[in-house]
Image (cartoon, rainbow, N blue to C red; front, top):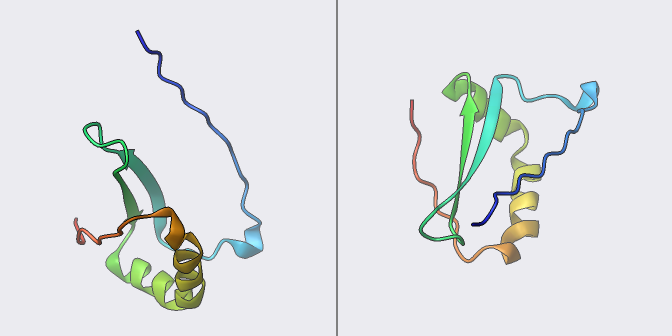
Length: 82
């Protein structure tokens, strides 16, 4: 019988760097049937809050995506939900 393993870590954001108004949380989920497949769920208070964040940090977001590109085979947006 295999025992699950969970590793937790904490970080405290520098108050001057906390600029994501309306951000609630992010979930990272791994597919039970395909261990190479993950889904992230980003939750925001409103679509406007998310769009404002993406607009304000579009360059940083693009740079992060480019830096992590070699880690993925494919990245597919799945939609916007309530």
